[in-house]
Length: 333
Image (cartoon, rainbow, N blue to C red):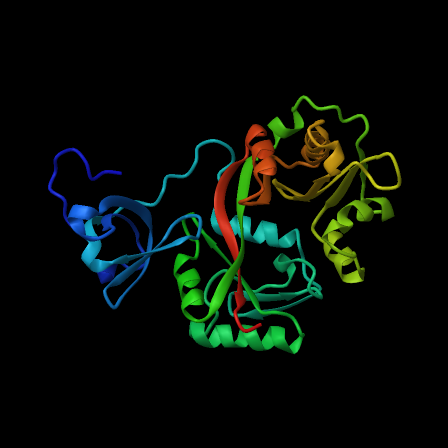
């Protein structure tokens, strides 16, 4: 934080700064004498009734009484990472959406309503990437009606943590009774280092379609019906990888969607009894080499924040967090 160094502490933010990235210091606990200083950085998403709401890049909201503020100022947007490919939020959001294409979609201004029989939240949620063409409360009501007509729970996918993400929308969703159900990191990295990884790819088989064996490993997510099969096969240029196991279920699987310069890695799964043998790395390396042959140079993936094992793997392959995305579900659904 930048509130040290002997300078006078000042609160240089007001309610007019809602929507800007701010850095604040405030007192927690009972009074200044018995409390302690705490710092927070994020987007100021509201300042109502004497309470500030700051949304951190992870999507976590921090509520701070105005009376507890010790210092505060507007700060520049977080600098873009210089490691790995450059990417805007909008570019990545569209690329990741094309890897999970719905069976049905409808535009609501610059929002897209997506449905695929309930298979994956990513293919069954509203994706807001601009102006819905109407006030947000009215748009959210339309979202609810659209999903309820299809007997699906209403979801909105929104993002935090990068320039152009949707902290204000996330705060609005929570104010209107939507609850964050799942959060994940969107990570990016250069593709060549993944293809150059020291991995034994000899046993990895690549195919254009997901056969029965591949689907049996993927079934830990539930039965793969026709709608799910269609979503898995969707995308500009799809490859499936598998490593044979002892029986009729592969020891490891993976999916890659090649889309221009991007290669998206998805559904990387390993038999729990076969973990720590390098199979996930082998699957990703084989897929990366094929994607490089087809002209891709950058990679993305999505990983839930609590999946420590996967996050460690992706750290080792050079992937860095670009932003976080969250699925908000209508609380009454």
